[in-house]
Structure formats: structure tokens, C-alpha cells
Length: 353
Image (cartoon, rainbow, N blue to C red; front, side, top):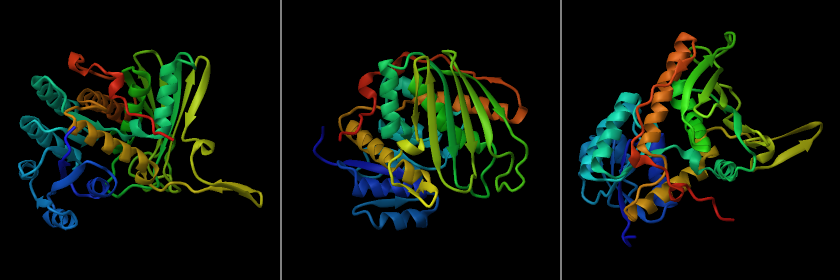
């Protein structure tokens, strides 16, 4: 591993990009942000001012070509990802790309094929739940086979609220995509079909379309996954998953499994409820970034692959169709290339202590 810090270009300086810049500066060892880019040049410049030696740009391509750039972190909106990813591959730069890899399966497949032509992995997709301590423990438990055959999983994904521009399709593409990736990762199975069921209209919903919704995922191993997606529940941010296997069940995100104080008094019990994903998954983002930096400095790429990003995009496309048409929709997947065989060495490490 090189002794010098990894020079990182961060593309996109909105909330997610700014949080990554802060973490790379304050909490991640072995890296420094040397360039940032955003179509909002003033926002990029303001962020760069706090980073010694960091340059700001209004074009992603210029940031990738900036002096000292050795790796790229993409946190811009999804439609802008493909162009940046392809240029990063041309330059041979390792990439951490926030989901989605691209918003559509066709674009994701083009990126996958471009990486295939290089003959080596350079892209990691930012599915941060794979780095959460609870989900890592659940993955280890399932891998040991103690609970037997996976049969079902029940998930809940609730947000306090969404901005006015949030659409019904984004419930699948921006929210349920995490459960889609978790299903594939936890069980090592592909998702073969999606069904979306909507309850009666909620009269006070601030979200366009029906909210909440129930998404049913079918897997190649015959398991079923239900996902309650509640885009604007109003009270907090919650992510829960209960795995049902032939010899037992296991749950993450349950009230009694989460850290934090629960108080019982005056006939009531309760505690705090996270208000957003950066609070709930802060440690996961931290672990994800550190392992990406460590791998890049060693000339390796680990974590969720371009195939994982493509597969998630394909399932999301089927989900949006199911949501719109109200019918069970099969997932169309290309053949998986051999380069993307998973290795246990690529799995995130459980936290120590």
C-alpha cells in the first residue's frame, strides 16, 4: 500500500457529496480530496475552500483530469453517472459510485461492458447497507447456514418525508433499490420477478401517487421478499428486515435490536427515532469509505460490483413496470460475465469491538 494519501475527485457537491468530502477529511485515513465538481460551480467552490489544495470545477471531466487525482467518488444525480464512469474507466481510475450505477439497465450494461474490456474491476457501487454492522452480522449468520434454507424476508423502508419533486417511480428506483440489493447480497440469489400492490388512497399523503406501497420480490431460489415502502410516514426513518428460514428467523432494525436508550415510564415506552439515512447509516458510510480507500491504495477493487449495479437497475425497471401496470413483471437480465465471480475476501469486515 502506498504511504501517500489517495487523491480523490468528488463529483457532485450536494448533500451526499458534501458529506463524503467531510468524512474523507475528518474521519477516513489515507485519502485527501484534491478536486470537486458540480454543475453549480459556486457550490463546488464553496466546498473546496475548506479543503487545503482542493480545486473546484463546474465540469466533471476537468475534475478527473485535475492534478493529483487518483480515484473518483461519484455523488452526482444518476443521469450524469454513465458519462463520468466511462471517462474514469478510460483513465484507469478506481471509482466509488453512489447508487444508481445508472438509472437504466441499458446504460448500466454499457458501463459493465466497458469495464469488462479492461479485464479488471475498477468500479464499486455504493450500496452502503452491506457495510452496516447489523446487516453484516445477518449476512454472516445466513452464510453459516444455522437457520437453514431462506424462505421469506419481510422488509420495511420508511422515510419522514420527500421533496415536492419526488415521484412514485422514485419509490422503486431510489428507495426499494436498497432492499433489492440486500436480497441479492444476503441470499446470493437473483431476483426474477416483481409485483407491486397499492392500498387504498391515503387522503393526506404529501407524495404524488399511492403511498405506502407493498413490493413483492421473487428470487431464483424460490424465496419471497415483501417490502413496505413508505415514502412519507411523517415520524422518522426506519429500515427493518426479518429473514424467515426453515429453522428460525432473524431480524435487523427491530426496536429491541437497535442501539439507543429505550425508556419506560408513566405507562409508555419508547426512544428516539432516526430522522434520515445519514444518521441511521453513518457508520456504514464510514466503513464503506475507509475500505474503498484502503483497497484503491492497494490497487484493488472490492464491494458491490458493476454487475450488482446492473442487476439492481434491471430489477428496478421491472418494478417500475409492475408499479405502473399492476401486474407481476419478470426481470430481464443479461448473462453474468465471469469476471464478476464473488470472493469472500471482497466482503466487508465486521467491526471489531
